[in-house]
Image (cartoon, rainbow, N blue to C red):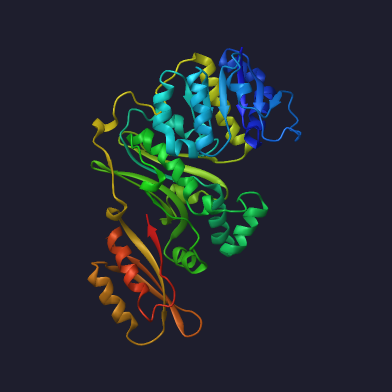
Length: 420
């Protein structure tokens, strides 16, 4: 029998305990052993969770229990969970975690600490979608050319409602909060940080890159407006918050931002709270993984799958899927300044003669070529210029935007969205 201790018996932790009990017959058949939850750690012992397991508010009751074989860490956060997981590994206990923030900062340290002790983390990226297993095992014969993912259900729900039903950003954010999709402080989701943590985990498996969130380009959806969505529709695009990893020779670009993507692309069709990840391998081509990216049962399903894997063999493959440096240890992180893309710009200007001529000269001075431009009347004698460019370099776009902000006929800070 395998005994499990859950540290953090919240929504997901409760679902883990319930799945292990309710599906015990099929889980036992697949694992070859019975698996039971012996105890769990909570912050508030007075709250009734409807579970028939021992609950405690002292993490030592799990970490120092010699009968517990697997510690499931579902605390959230970075520093405190790192100490807890480190202690679990040092005591020889296998670990399963869903903590993307922990892994975004400490995955390589944890791999070193784990050694041959099983350490699994399927639920840390895209909830119930088995993308870690697919990338680490199913696609292990491939050089990974790119990863492109919708990895935050809150943002995808908001963008879907803004696109399909014309809801404003502020209104749909409030609705998402009312529905429990977004937190009272939604910055982690709408600012792109949640998706960035997940991207860094996948990039480690695919490319062996030890990057931190501070090292990569991260933007959110806060500036997307109805004008941007109208432009996207007119030119056959959808707007999504995308997490992107792409290999270019010996460099890998990692970025998270709102993006215009052609409607016919498979990933553009993923709507609502669902997640989807496209992975392109040099031998297999494009593969797409779709499903629930959050929620108690979906995330717990991935946690329990990891527990079953450990119970089956008790052995550990390398945590990130490689025993030697990936790609001959030659891959480096591309500077965000050097990323090349097409760009969409929304520029609100005073509607007067000579404005377009001045803008054209500025675009030309930064070697940025305009592909399409629409002018839409705005309020108080102003106009919105909706512009798409040919491929340009990120540092040139950013420098041009800074110059544009200083011009007296520019009424608001220009909005830029990259085109994928």
